[in-house]
Image 1 (cartoon, one colour):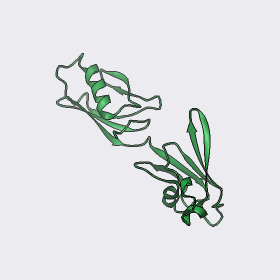
Image 2: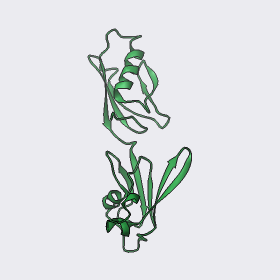
Image 3: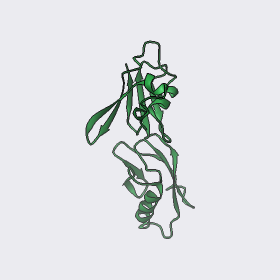
Image 4: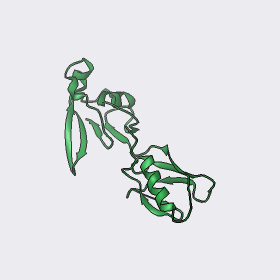
Amino acid sequence: MDYVIGPEDVLGVVVWKNAEMSGDVTVRPDGMVTLPLVGDVKAVGLTPSALRDVLTKAAAKYYENINLTVVVRQINSKKVFITGEVRAPGSQLLTGPRTVLQLIALAGGLTEYADAENITVMRSQGGKTVTFKFNYKDVSRGRKLDQNIDLVPGDTVVVP
């Protein structure tokens, strides 16, 4: 599956034999990047190769036979969050499949005051927030494993 560009990602645009058009750009919250001559171009939702095609077409007005490459330099758009009674609350990059239990482990585990049976995963879907319950005690004992869901970018795990 090809990587899809998101807000806050840092992209390297390299134009062969053209340093003025080459450089790193950060995808703005509105999903756009700005490049010399080309101007604003929507990047969010595109793969690097699709963005390359869009930029190549836009730059063709100014350059013949342009050789352009788009490289993802830094992934910042694929974050999940964990808050509450964990040792290291905050955000984690979601660079591959990750479950609730794995995120808790990355956050240093639960504190002694955590309500391990009433953890909630909050997810925005279609403009609404949906919640999933997670019982750490059950999952850590190998029971009710279906609640150990794969996280998606933007999920927030709340440990009361």
